[in-house]
Structures are given as structure tokens and as C-alpha cells.
Image (cartoon, rainbow, N blue to C red):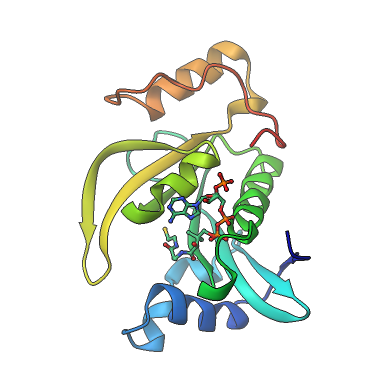
Length: 181
Ligand SMILES: CC(C)(COP(=O)(O)OP(=O)(O)OC[C@H]1O[C@@H](n2cnc3c(N)ncnc32)[C@H](O)[C@@H]1OP(=O)(O)O)[C@@H](O)C(=O)NCCC(=O)NCCS
């Protein structure tokens, strides 16, 4: 694996990555999300020899389907094409997961592009519900990872059932440790 540094970042360096990787045919203004400036938001960048090669942001944001206050959302997950497949995306995602755990999250979720769903599955996210379309981008799944490590086992199971209600897969059976992926 090449030497990559993941650091908290201001928003601006992430915009070029979002634009190139996630919204190449859209105006730059579409790469700014309202949650980017919320109080609890954190942005992370991946650097190789001071070049920004990847980006991810995490928001304290409840999904309407989860009756959980401590919900965090990953968004803007992107690695420049020439640096993909080298473990950088997973380092960024793990950084976001660890941040959510530090903030005592119950759940971390994202709207995952269908062609990136396996990437999130590798980090322990599960698909919740059916595939849906986001205009100008394409097919997505809502995906979520249960982080109920701050609760008793019974509370954890309750949370898992809430998250994965109407879903075929079983809830994750044991609490995840922060280094478990
Ligand atoms: C999705 C993305 C962020 C992953 O970053 P990455 O640096 O390429 O991924 P990694 O190298 O860390 O991959 C980690 C694991 O996930 C797998 N993986 C990564 N992207 C995948 C994909 N699109 N489909 C299936 N598996 C994928 C890798 O094979 C690897 O598995 P392994 O550990 O068994 O080898 C990156 O490929 C990207 O920017 N893609 C285009 C934009 C996008 O789809 N972003 C997600 C928006 S929801």
C-alpha cells in the first residue's frame, strides 16, 4: 500500500475531488452540500506527498427512517481514479466511522451509489430497503452500519432491529469494535 496520510481538512480542497470524481458534468456549485457548514461536520482528505487524492465528509444527520438521535452520515466519498483500488477509500471511510464512534453514534449511514455498494459492505454497512434513483447521478442504496457499542446488548439489539427492519439480512450480532473492519 502506498503511503497515504488522512487528515481533517477545510472544505475547499475537497471540492475539486468531488467535482472530478462524483459530479464531472455538473456545475461546481453542485459540489457544495448544505451540511458542509453545519456545526458538527468534519471533512477528511487523503494526501500523497501533499497532493489531495481523496475526500470524505461526515455529518451529524438523522435519516428519516431511523428513530435514532445519534445518526451520522458519510457523504462525498471519492478517490481520484488513478489512486483508486489502493486502500485509500477504506482508510477515509474508517476515519469517518471512527469519528462517529468517538461521537457515540448509534448508526452511520450513506446513500451509496449502487456500483460502490460492495465497498461499503466491506466496511460492515448493510443495504436497507430497495434501490432508488437520485436525479443526474443514478441508482443508489441506503446503507447503514450499526455502531451501538455504547449501549447494553439489549439496547444494541433493539437499535439493530430498528435499523434493519424489513430487511432480509440478520442484524449484526455483536457490537463492532473500532478496528473491526
Ligand atoms: C468507491 C471509492 C471511494 C472506493 O475507494 P478506493 O480507494 O478505490 O477503495 P479501496 O481501495 O479502499 O477498496 C477497499 C475494498 O473495497 C473494494 N471496492 C472499492 N471500490 C469498489 C467498487 N466500486 N465495487 C466493488 N468493490 C469495491 C476494493 O476491491 C477493496 O476490497 P479488498 O479489501 O477486498 O481488496 C472509489 O473507488 C471512488 O471514488 N469511486 C468513484 C466514486 C464513488 O462511487 N464514490 C462513492 C459514492 S457513494
